[in-house]
Length: 57
Image (tube, rainbow, N blue to C red; front, top):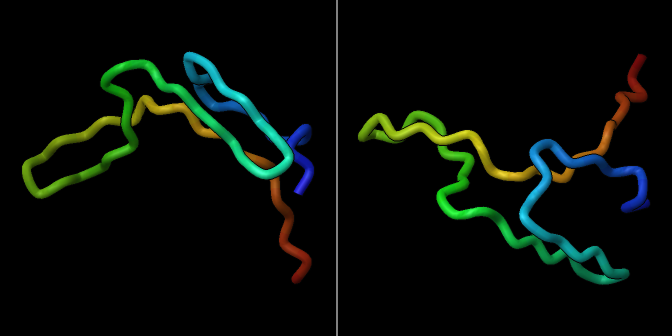
């Protein structure tokens, strides 16, 4: 996996990407919870993602 090709959705407060780890420090009160039984929703946490392709086509 090439970490240099990954992009942030909502960049964190700070982060460090090494050859064998990713360390992320988020801002307070960030999370990715959706539709809990008590109706709590929070979708504001940082996400490090990469584009993928399906080879079935």
